[in-house]
Length: 251
Image 1 (tube, helix red, strand yellow):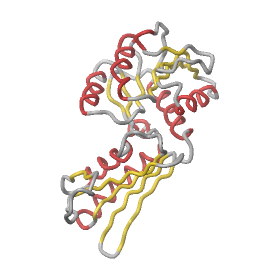
Image 2 (image 1 turned 120 degrees about the horizontal axis):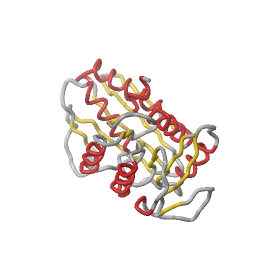
Image 3 (image 1 turned 90 degrees about the vertical axis):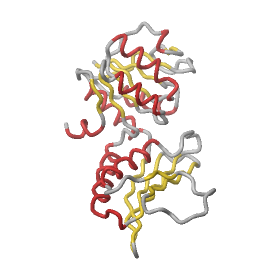
Image 4 (image 1 turned 180 degrees about the vertical axis):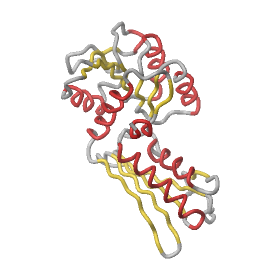
């Protein structure tokens, strides 16, 4: 039985993930971390990992970047793998993650969907074929409670596209204050926030007299929960290191 510590357990994604884990025969949540410590299931909830004395086999995080340091400290203390599914990390946070991965197994993905990973691979391939002749724009849509923009998934897609291009692109997030033509080396990002949109991402390759669009639509949060569960099973027993969806898909 895989015992899970769940950070962000009282959030919407935390509730969905708890429900999905409870449906697994080989996995259960044994402890939760959240600023809201009101119990909703049969496991204790602590406001921070530092207060916890319960051992788990793996930690899954769907919370906030501000929780990162406490999460990694807890995981290193008891030597367990970490699944990081939170977005909005700073450059300093990313360095902290890479440093922790030298001590414990760390799995990070800005999106836990296998479909998004496939979209990133297709976008990279398209960029390598289409090259300089096409302008690249990324449009992402999410619910009205999402606080970071552009989404971590959009940035992940932008990075994948960058690897396929023959030049080093510049990410552009806001054009309203600059009156000038679009540069050929730009990748533009547009963010939409409204209603209960789970997540939609469109990549547009805009050329002369044609536009090629690659799209992904998430229809429920269970999609992300199931991806995190697959990542958890994948990470049990792994040595220290930095892991992504690429390694999970290859296995």
